[in-house]
Length: 167
Image (cartoon, rainbow, N blue to C red):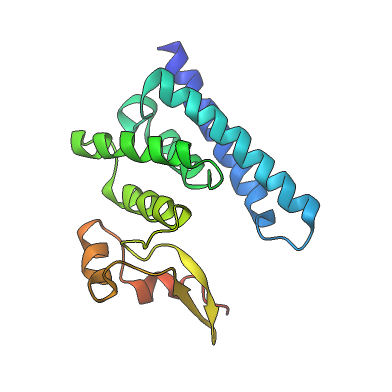
């Protein structure tokens, strides 16, 4: 049990470091971008090890906060598709077992699809901004996007992107 408690603390600490550093993800400073990439790569490598040893570190194992941290690390492992694909596979099993949420799974599925060069399903990944409005990466069924989002507990696209609007 001590190992699991230590694992939960490690995951939470990684999420704190991720949040602190994420402001540099799209920095104009190449050194800041590089620091972000190195951090996410280190975290992705560690998540790979965790998944090999424990499977998906779901809420039933490490608690809600640490499970969300594991999801965040997988979500940001953009240059490690093997990590994202494995996390996606394990999270699917965890959602089926009731130990992970379908909302986070939907975000990871879209992120992985976009990183693979495919169309996303739920419209969670934003490609850019046009005329002040966030534009999602292409979606499989754009006409069903809000319906599909509702099925997994994600607010309608317009409400979601309103959070990112510049005040």
